[in-house]
Each structure stands twice: as structure tokens, then as C-alpha cells.
Image 1 (cartoon, rainbow, N blue to C red):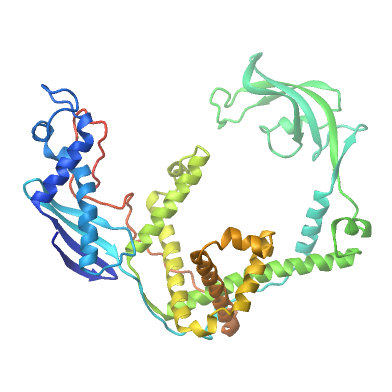
Image 2 (cartoon, rainbow, N blue to C red):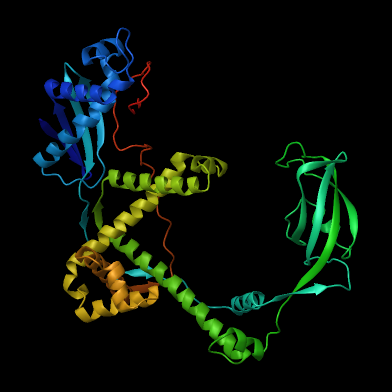
Length: 473
């Protein structure tokens, strides 16, 4: 099938494809065979109308979608082979002409391999945040440890106070009639948690265990249940018990209970301080690492097709939609509630995707130039396997059996370790600065589309055809 390269700009190739009338008519006939059972033509049993009759009755365009699925893949593969193109994106098809008499003319756009001209990469200056640990953070972590080993102690000699935990039975009445969702037995509630409508938790303060009482309240005007919004109700409440959280004393005995390496409070504080310092250093190293890569990207010339970015955005959208659907939620509704449009989200994801793609290609370019320096020795590879196995809580032999079964798995693992070695080296040779980087400019030219193939023809199907799918502009 004939094809011709139309253009090649910004690492995006546009190819003009042609499918002869004879070949496209075969595709139309294949589309008819695929969907014959759906067509109902007067004078024929359903599914038995021959190809010419279906075309005369419904119009040839009824078969275009499925005919394209038959004709395009072969024409596309032949064109890529003819022009020696290895696509780096999904193809975008733009149908220019279509018909059984005229054949099919299509323009297909694909991304080519990005081009990277490396700039300065050894010894660049990049920002690394300060990592000082303050005493408030140490105290907060110790308080969290005390909370984890706290115990609940019953209270019998006083009334409910703010912060107490209580067990109650309650039932709500509107005009002396119980309302749906307004009752529970043995409900555990922390006073001050804000779990109930305003006034409910405050209304329990001052009451004692074993007491039953009425609690008149008014639902908020903006309450989600319209039949209760702004209504005056009465809750009948029985208070069963009160418990309070009792924290252990911060002393040497507590320290020995929660720590494997400290015996005194001062030792424990130093232990926590070192843990927090290690966490901050790790976070700062990640920031430093990304800032180094960003600086190298700025120093380099990267020619990258927008189609690669669009593919990444599409995949991000699909992942989000799948995650939300797992919980019975709609991602589009979430964006609407957040005050964002699909276009806003795509623009944000495009900036993130472009940054990731540019970083990855710059790293690959440095790997190619520093191949000797970064190549792993057998000893380094073995040590990396041992470390990875330890993190997974298994022996090195089991790790190999599970994660390094094939040569491809091993090569992928080696590639990751060499990348890690590269990043360590870059941090060692880069200069730390105290000037935070300027915010990156957001690119907003990523198109909003939902499918890989785009057809410029539009046709309506008004018939008894249950397998139709609209061609997309």
C-alpha cells in the first residue's frame, strides 16, 4: 500500500497512507461479515442481508468504523517498515478520504525517538534543603510513641468532660417520630471529635454513666439529608460508661519498653533525633537529586514529541479513573468538585510527564557517556541482590527465584542499579547551593483526547445495529 512521509518536525513524523479501492472494499466486506447478524433489512431474515443490500439500505458509512480496524493496522505497519520508523508513541490517524469507490487516504502521526544533546552535567550547582531537626519534632515523635502504648481507663467518679471517650445508645426523633439513620446502640464516641452534628457531643458533657436524658438539637441548614436540614429534633440518649486515655510516664522504664537500643530518656531522645535527621537527610537528598537532574535538563537540548507526553497523560488519566472506580467513584466528578476541568488536570499531568520523560532521557544519555564508570562489577551486582533481598525479607536465592527468573529480569535489575550508581555519582560531584530553584513553566499544549486513533469523518447510525461505535473527530 503506498505511503509518503509528509513532514518530520519536533520528532513527530507524519505519514500519508493510501489503501486502494479494491483493498478497502475487502475491508468493508469483512466489516459486513463481522456485523451481519445485527442488520435487519425488509425482505431478509435478520443477519442474512448480503453486502450490497446492507450498503444500499443503511449507507456504506455504517461499515466504516470496523473497516478501518481491518485496513489501518496493515497499512500502518507497512508504512512504518517502508520509512524505517520505530514509533515511540501510539499512532494518531487522521482520515482524509474514505469510501468503497475512492479507497482510503489517511495521515498518521507518530513520535520518533527523542534527541538529547547533553550540556554540562558533571559538577553542576543544585539546591539541597536544610535538614536541621528541632526539639518540637523530637517531642512530637515521643508523644506519638506514648500514644501508641497508652491504655483506656474507666472513669466512675465524675461526669463526662471534653476529650473523654464514652459508650452511648441514642435515637433521634423528628416530631416524635424516629428518623432513618438516627439510632445506634453501644456507640463509642470521643467528645470533641466532631463526629456528630454541632451540639451533640457538647450535650453529653456533665452527664454521668447510667444516666438517660433527652438532647434537643437543630440540624444545620446545609445538612446533606434535605428532610432533616434545619429541623429541630430530640435525641434520647443513654450514657453507659466513660473511659480516658492514660499515657505512660516519660521515664527510663517507658524507654526500655519501646526502644531496643536506649535505656534512658536522654538516650531515647538522641535516638529519635538521629532517626528524624536520617529521614530529613533522605528527603533532602531526593530533592537535591531531582534538582541536579533539572539543572542538567536545563543545560541540555532535548527534542521531544508532544505525542509521547500525551500518551503519558492518557495513561495517568486511565490509572486515576481505574482507582476511583474501585471505590465506586467517578474521577470526572471528583475533578468537578475540586474546581478543576479535565483540561486543567491534563495540563498539570503534562508538565509532570514532560519533566519525568526529559529526566529519564537525560539520565540515559549520561549513562551512555559514562558507561565504563557506571558498569557494575560482579561483586557490586551480588551486593545489590543481597541488599534487595534483605529489604524484601528473604534470602538472595529466593529473591533470584522470584524476581530474577529471566535474563530480561536480570538486565532490568542491573539497569536500575546502574541508574542508582549514576545518581550517587552525580550527587558526589555536584555543588550544593542554598538558592531554591524557580518554579518550572507549565506547558499547556497537550491535546485533550480519549483514544489512540482519531478519524476526521463523522457519521450517524440510525438503525437496528447493536454493535455500533462512533468515529471520533
